[in-house]
Image (cartoon, rainbow, N blue to C red; front, side, top):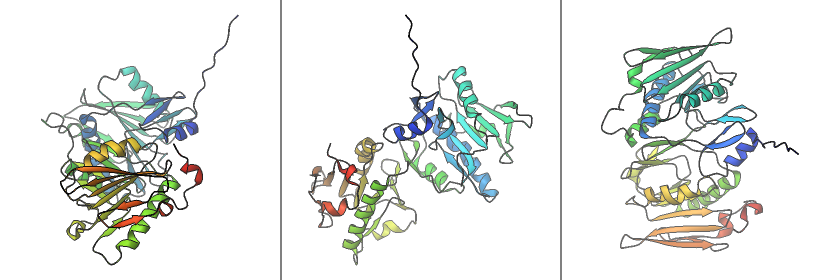
Length: 374
């Protein structure tokens, strides 16, 4: 007797919901989720070199409704395939319809895998040019869709110029690999900030930076935003008339000592000199992160390591609205850090501001289903 086994394939919509609960970034290939491969410093150096040129060209064109989307916008190709292109140029209003996509070949990836990925990306009906960059081979390949539906392939190497018809500009191939042969390949915080401040970003995309890598931020849930708004409201009321200000998640924090750039959910700044730049802060008094399933580990490890080395910081707060648990890290007078958990209906006490916030104020309007105990 024989039995027929049919593998259960995950759909793109199922994958989207599943990914929101995962710590790492994944792609859906043939109905199966796979973790996105790790990226080395060379990857981000090439990414910045080429997308920087793309952004400058869009700036010269006046943008015309176009923007770059970098390593974070998932591209749904069909029912069972969702890939994460390393860079795209697409209409701001329709990021899933990119005429130009760029992929960077990772070290050690087989040629068959590169071709499989190329063929999958070509399924996007809006695509007109696919740029495949191979740092190891120092090559740039451009696949261009022809009027008869076939694809023409051109390959370029250092010493040659490549042209992107969809952006109407050319670039020197050697420039794509600039810096790879230097003693330090990793990007600096300054290089990242210069790249990120350039025009032609999507207003929907924000990027953090640490360990020489660029990371796109995912969207937040309604309950996450409710907790953020509740905390900002309580802090704003308490700080009225004081020299301190509270900010939400759109002001970037530069951790200069550790070369990190982040967007904390809530921050309190009491140093007027720290507000001289419109788009960054460097010396916060308090930082608060509201946890989600996909960011909890990152907030407890990576961000904590960066934040606790900021000389001005006195308190770092992690709020888990699902478990109704708050972990507060406080800098003591001798410079050491202590942890103070608050569970359930226990209030949050911020010693640096002499402020106690009741639990009911923190979790106001948060759906009961999101308050289940662990």
